[in-house]
Length: 442
Image (tube, rainbow, N blue to C red; front, top):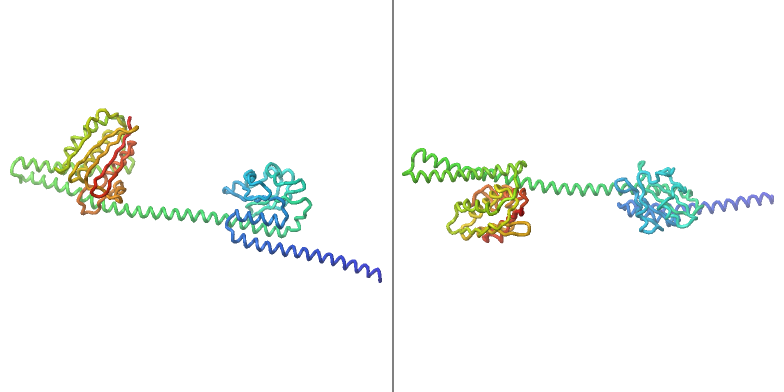
């Protein structure tokens, strides 16, 4: 009986010890479950990979006793694993811990989706900085989701610690982290797609506004052009009919009718040339032939033509003196002449009194030509419109001044094709305007 009593006491003591161990395990497991729940709440509310890595590092250090650790996340569209955080590692050393994807250890026999101790063949190069002391071993913890290694952790743990006892907790943590990293990827991709969609929507809205504006301009242009073309054509037909019917008093009156008809024809041809030039520019068939040419000769050719343009008697044209010393410039003589005549024609049309001055100056590597008038001027908000197709500063069919609104657009394209520039400056309505051309010295 005494022996049986001693035996029972031993069993009772052993069971008590086992119960104590079970209580300790239960307490540790309860604590781990509490930690996992807290971590899960944090990860669920964290859309950023850096925050996921930071939370995970704290768990490994505080709950698993890691003396050092690093957290790698799949980055750069899946081409590398980048160390995001590290405990016990110098911050400057993180940049050296970049590893290739999809296999960060191509030279080592390693099951990537399985937690395991790393052997000496794997711990090479920069990874050796995780082993702060010789009594530490490195443990690999993968974060796998849908057969994709989203990232992993490497823990420096004291040799002999039975981390396998916490394998269940570690497995749950791995799943939570893998899903969190995957969700962070999705969140980031959705953010990029949202930003791209927002940017494309804004661009589409701008394009729609521009299309509506262009459609409005074209409708107005067609109506305006029909009116502009009909006016000289009516004059030509009318004067020609009068001459054919001999409804004139003498030859002088007949000559004036023919001159008016000729002037109307010239005006009609000018309008048609503007439309054809724009069509060539938009189709890419407009050609310029840039060669060295004397600006003095060009101005001498432009002057008599411009002086013959109709203008108000109160308007004086002032030409520059002695341009023979100017160097040759790179230009297409015919096209630059077209631009100059267009600018002078506009200045004469919009100037009722005062003067139109042509100023030519040599600069560094270029020559500037200015057409300065004292005409109606241009409001600041309308100045940018003048280089748009089908637009004039004063819109509508009741405008005092005719024209298609294509002249400055064509001039701008021609100057750019010749390597020059055209610039408009006006202080406002009624204060005149200045158009400046620049051409490169040959």
